[in-house]
Amino acid sequence: MRAVRVTKAGGPEVLEVADVDVPAPGPGEVLVEVAAAGVNYIDTYQREGIYPMPTPYTPGLEGAGRVTALGEGVSGVAAGDRIAWAETLGSYAEQVAVPWDKAVPVPDAVPDDVAVGSLLQGMTAHFLVNDTFPLSGGETVLVHAAAGGVGLLLTQLAAAKGARVIATTSSAEKAELARGAGAAEVIDYTRVDDLAAAVRELTGGEGVHAAFDSVGATTFDASLATLRKRGMLVLFGAASGPVPPVDPQRLNSAGSVFLTRPKLFDFVDTTAALRAKAAAVYSEVAAGRLDVRIGHRYPLEQARTAHEDLQGRRTTGKVLLLPS
Ligand code: NDP
Image 1 (cartoon, rainbow, N blue to C red):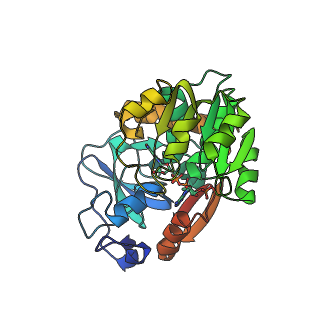
Image 2: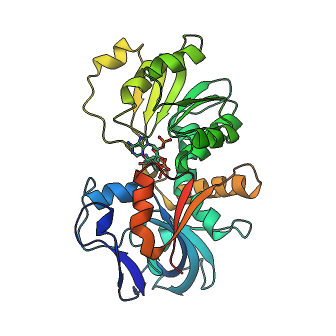
Image 3: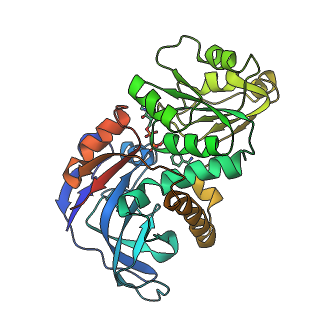
């Protein structure tokens, strides 16, 4: 079968397609024919070695497809069933062996591409506004990179909960998408000199209840400076690079604010929690309350271009690799 392989850490050029053996599903695993694999920012951190990986390996943690065979001891699923997953390395491939306890069933109403487009990024958006900084309505929040994969879903979920969303994006096209997702205000953060001042102005000087920051290095200081007293900086990614060490005294000076650096899989750390979170997202999708934008589809051979486009800020919404 064809699969993307990485033999050494590096730039997008280290992503190459090769012929490899079809994996045999081990105990507890199911073999899946991959209909669509998700491209996520974490794939680029792993490829670059920011998160060290043993080489060679097949990248990609996320996908959806049909089960073709069951490993020993697997029950509750049958060949032909549609499933999705978000924590199985080896997903940039025609087939992958997925631990059944890390998989979620996909409802009939949710097509494969949408199932991938709303799994890792949808669950992330969902845990941020329900579990990390639960929104109940009436808050003002800042969402960076609001036209991205997580960003569009986070903006929709926050707005649906009654929060006023101030979004940041880097272009007029992206601003339009963020508005369509429910952002009340959009700032082009590549064009303002003082981002924190621009956000504060939109809040009558008060600041935001929470800043959802996945950009990291270039936005962290502004995010901190936009918070109202006792607000929360939810730093959940580092698309522009990691944030340097922070002196806790800065949280005091900023108004007794909170800083958290959450990750999804500490919030969905059991099979039951994972399936409940996926089901919550999929039910929003199936009911038409959560619009999943598949921005880009690439064949497996163009994994390199997919990574270049994602890191080059040329994508919006979800980026998929299609093995066939
Ligand atoms: P996105 O589609 O959001 O792509 C990243 C976006 O970041 C770009 O489109 C760009 O939007 C913005 N950006 C700002 N500065 C830069 C820069 N210097 N280089 C590249 N991009 C930049 O990606 P994902 O939806 O896959 O992921 C979004 C973030 O969420 C990532 O940081 C990821 O690590 C994080 N994440 C965290 C999880 C967790 O559990 N903590 C789980 C899943 C994702 P613009 O052009 O508008 O600035």
